Length: 140
Image (cartoon, rainbow, N blue to C red):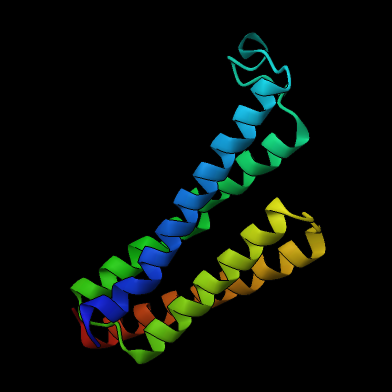
């Protein structure tokens, strides 16, 4: 498996994070244009409008579970344990992140958002178990 194929899902996840950061910036700019005062939010007071809070939460969410994905991808690449199965599972994980983010910033329907999240976490857990078993079996 080529380095590019292994890293492509990681790049897609990074792009999602950047896109959500830009979305957050737009939502906050809109909030300021609508009258939100910086004095009311300077110390993380919960005075942002709902749309800005949703954008913020969707953005922050990309620094939680995906961190384990980043670490695993780098480890799998370094230890040469990333194969076709790894890449397929990585794409499924990233697709679930995109689905979750899309629901988050649109309808924010928690049952659907939660399903995307749960499937993504399950896939990531499977990826980690496969990696751990392979590393322990190799005695690396």
